[in-house]
Length: 438
Figure 1 (cartoon, one colour):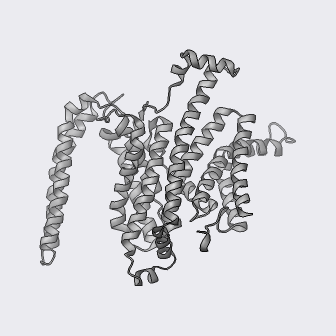
Figure 2 (figure 1 turned 120 degrees about the vertical axis):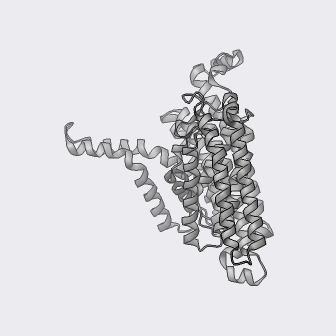
């Protein structure tokens, strides 16, 4: 019975997307589908951290941004003028930073038992910092002066952007390892504050380091892993196909491109979902849930709680980073200012809660449900306000106020969905399975 109910939820979502295609446009329906697929992958990453291990990470935005950074660095061609102007200086600054870290760690290990050990470490860090800045700052200033209207940054490696998806996961995983080593010993509420703060630091870096990401000027025109519409419109086989389907080639080219994206994203989602299910059902997954449910007992049985938490924190962040790289690929641009906690943290957490934390299929369902209504809430709100105000005078101030309020229906809809779910299904639409069924 529960299996039929679960299948029914996904059939309802498929029906809603088809209805959007029928009554609004297939371009919009496929755009929603692609964003739902990416949201489902990101939700799976957060579910690994919270559903498997009970880690309250509200720094999702920062790890998604690391994936976006990878998409830009991998796919954009290098700006040779910028490299000539200050590339060597940046590399020397990075080397100075690495040497400073190595020297600080070595000094700490050697002198930690001494009275002046920490003073020596601080002195090494301060001296290294000033050396790094003396090399780094002049180089970045020269880079940002190179045709700032269109470049003003070093660019990337000019490789196929699809390579950036796993690289984005590696970037996010590396950042998560550093964050986890610092924060995972903290209590849950402090962990949340720390991860949120660190994610804001990551986004602030993307916004302000113009030499690397162009900052708020954005990097546009990222290469695609799928064909361009204009190329399809000038290809004979595509024109013949559009003619057979009795569709305009321009409209069909847009639909075809979105279908290509959907196919790629579906493959990644199914792969991540398969691996997540295998991990959840393995002895490792049972151990993680045992730690989540009772850390004291797990510690008494010899489990290294902090190491296991770090492990799952990194794995979940890798998945979020992959999704972040996919989202930047779909957008075709890196826009650091768009990394807002509302979209990349709050919504993802709502997806996990509504879908059912601890259940991978629930995380996927939550990704589809929440993103669908996030997009459709505004047009539905406009329709609702038009119905409610249909009998009011055209010049009524109340009517104008209600119509202007329709754009705020998104937040109200998210709150309503969350409240209804918690009231009638506190464990989510697809609750975590327990007992022998796991």
